[in-house]
Image (cartoon, rainbow, N blue to C red; front, side, top):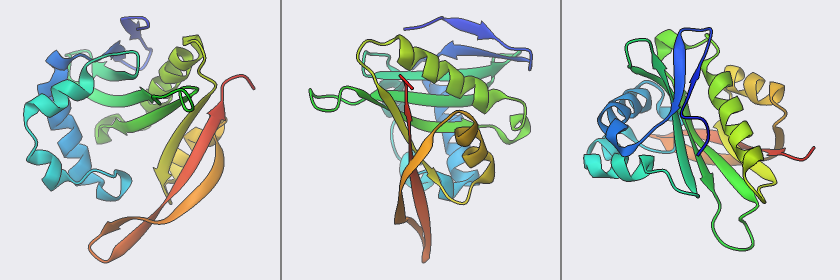
Length: 180
């Protein structure tokens, strides 16, 4: 499932997350869902009602699912990203990047870039995977610049993708072809 740990110069460590990380991941995720409600499809109130077992299932590595976390020197989760390979014969060449998030105090320190590069490297090492896709709520200049820098191209915009109260938010769909 890739390298178990990768150190960085930014004072954080990347590693594969496991079901044992679920309590910390759940807290981290709920915090980000509350801070940035327009950036994620999930709703904080709905997610808070789910049992811890839901997070444990989410973090269980498999050929179709992988989560990587960025941890500070004390072992606190400060960033995370998920990868899901599409199931089925017609879409198994596509991987989805999901749930990229970084704790506010750690933003701007290279964590999102390191997490994304880890996913891209992992995807390239998998047999038969030809593209990665993701969505980003717009506007989100920092995320858009990161994805531009990494070569993700826009292939569509979903208007009215998320609604928070009466406020509508579009999502941009992007893809990166791994062999180009």
